[in-house]
Structure formats: structure tokens, C-alpha cells
Length: 294
Image 1: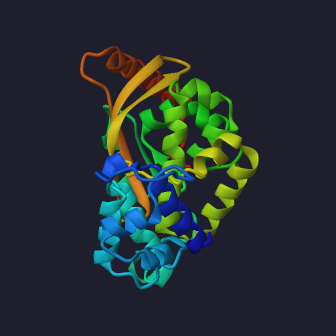
Image 2: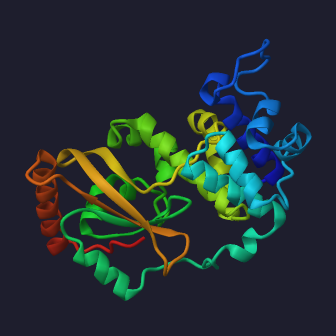
């Protein structure tokens, strides 16, 4: 991905989201486009308009941390957006390749000890994915919850983004499909900024942009997010609606991968549905054992 284009579009899109009133400035004169003017951002950041304009044109190479912080404050960037800006700056000056932990280029398979850890999580679904949203490994409940995703994937490794945008079944699985779609794109955009030279990411984004208007529209918004915790609702074909809390953590031992664990509120309808799903899964595994890892 062209770093200068990414920088330009990201900064200009963040600037377009703000109004003078948002940042305590008077609204003076007619504005040709929505949002703050470059000069207003420059003033808020304490830099010259010439310098800020240069940065917004994509020339982030060599910019200091203090200037990046000032721009992040001026544009009211949240934690995910600020991190994305710093990732773009690292890519611009070449330091991202030095700072980024080495990632495996071969097909990833879970260590036996990691499989044991997944097996030990019995109260809720658990899964491991990478930044491209490939579903790499699960526990039994995780596999059962995503049964449709596995069944409808033509290749060996399911991908949440492909499923969301290229398979109509995703509208059934995600009752709030728009939020799921927004989240998927924001995760991909965040990962693209973190690892701009990932060829497989380039291929995935190109495929989705070519085949899905919904993806292409969301991708152009340049929204990013840190996928840490929250609540999601799913609709499972066997047990119905599941409203699950989740926590996601980056895996220090496997850079670029994250572990997500889902849990239901105790004594809730979802807890009962998960118990039923677990019972169905145990029965199925006794009769037809399956690998839980892609």
C-alpha cells in the first residue's frame, strides 16, 4: 500500500470529522469542504501551516514524536487512531521493519501447549486469529459457534472478513451486521497500518474491494480500532441468539496473533444456550471427532 496515500487520506479524513466548535475555534468564512482547515489544525498543533500541509501530503518520514503527539491532540484522535498515525510514521521512515517483531511466513499451527490452553477454556468459545482476520484455532465451543463459517469456507482457513462481505449467511450470523462489518474493516485497516508490507493483506483488501461495494465504502473511511473488549450478538442455527461479552489480548509469544475469549452472563438465556451448544458439541465429538484447528 502506498504510504503517502495512506497518510494523506487518513489525516484528511480525521480533519473532515471535526468542526471548529468541536475544538473551540470560531467558524469564520465559508468552507469548501466539511471539517477543519489545514491552517486550523496547524495552529492547534503548534506548527506552521506549510509544515502541516507537507505532513498531510504524506511526508511523515522523520517527523518527531512530539509533533505526532501534537497532531493527534489537534485532531482529537482516540487511542487506536493515534497508534495508527504512529504506525504510518514508522512505515514512512522505514523504522517499522526494525521495530516490528518477526512474523512467521509459513503456515501457522498451534503448539501442543497452546492447544491444551484452548482445551482448558470450557465455559465459553475461544479463538485465535491474526490481523488479517484468519480464524486459526479454536476450542470446542469456538468451533461449534462458528460452524457455519467453517462449513461455508472453500479453503482450509476461514476468514472473518471474507465471510462478512462475500457470504450472505453473515447477515444471519451477525444480527447487527453493519456493526460487524464496520469492526472487520477497522481491524483490517489497523493491521494494514501496522504491517504495510503484508502481501497477503494487500491481496485480501484487493479482493474485497473488487467484490464488495460495502467493503469498499467502509475502507475509504479510514476508520481504525483496538479490538479489546465488548459485547457481540450472534445467531446460531442450532441454539438461537447468543449475546456474549468478549476479551481480546495480543499473544506475546506469537506476534501478530490475538486470543479472544467469549463469556455469557451467568444464569442468562445465552448461558443456557451455550450449555446446550456444549452438550450438542460433546455428543457430536464422541461420534465424529474433528480437528478444531484450521
